[in-house]
Image 1 (tube, rainbow, N blue to C red):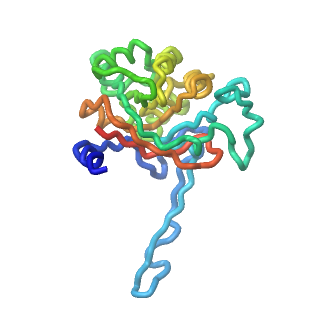
Image 2: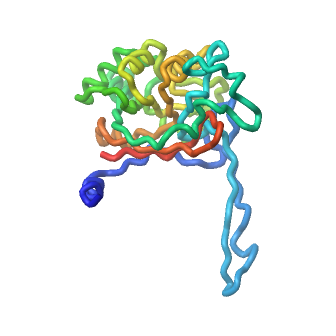
Image 3: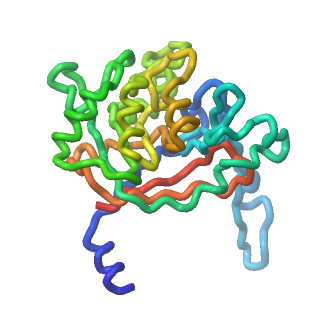
Length: 272
């Protein structure tokens, strides 16, 4: 135990989560984040003039930095492994198979593929354009820069640079102030297959939808979640890792044990 603690103390902890606040970005099909201070200091005084405050929150399971359960998507009525979705779902029980409460705490090797930094000489920007499609070639180039390899069971994170837009909800969701359609860079199907061929445990990014949007069929989500059993993590903050050129790290995160849930907020960290 002491050796493990000493090893942890010699490394840096990077917070990969975005903050929660009223008005924060959220995918339009999911509920927003709601917050209220339900008990203010002074509302009720205890003996000795002591008081406490408390709050209430409400949010969707796919709001903010979060992980998708495998039951989040289906195709032709089937979840991953051929499970019939209609047979395992209910309004109040959620989905009884492949739900987020079945995901154990994650402690795995993480790899950052910094696509935005790789493409900066060509885009002349610290962020990828809204219509940028990440291809296998981009992934290979970023992996070469990282001077590492992807191993089965890894968590692979793709940086587009869009984390810096997070305080501006409209720009983060649509790519422009006042926009309406969800728009953003990300991998298309061939890049998703590149990831699944390497047997990754999860793939994540700093965008709201992981894959390039808009797209009518969400093929990347279908391929990773339904066909491949690979988790998706969205709305990460990868700026500090990029700034310090940290490409390999220990990835730690734990979803809430929401019985029947299709996703969960997480507070991921990288230890490097």
